[in-house]
Length: 169
Image (cartoon, rainbow, N blue to C red; front, side):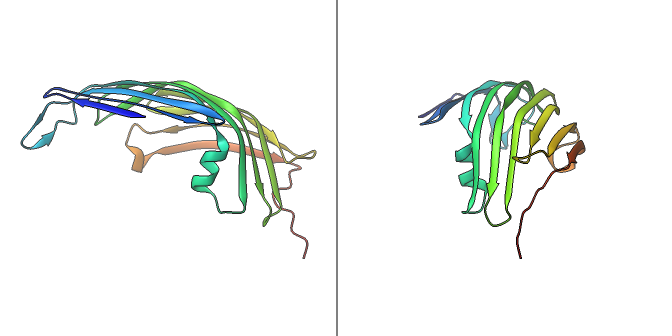
């Protein structure tokens, strides 16, 4: 369920999403002076996002109908900064399997470790395979300090002897 409360100086939102394969909890508060001109985006932001999330639900929201995403993500993030310049610290870990019958893909990420470091996400580990002998190995970072629209990506992923698609025609 979701609960929200507001006063002249503070807005608080609490919610939890429970599913058969996990639960995600969001708890945030913002000290946001509001007036006739709207919300002051310099108000402080505090909060926490935590829990376990089944990857299948993410797949159902984002992927084509015949594609499947399985696995689990464990999330523990502390939110801070301001509404104008939010920050997060913490990490998300897990494993995910992506299958696409149409493309003949079977990609397994057996180790995923993403660290939130202020306005930067660092991929500390991304290790997996193609369901056979192929190896997937990645790392890098995404810097959001200039804003989400101007994010700077520095991510490398190596695919060694990896079959990403198997189409017989």
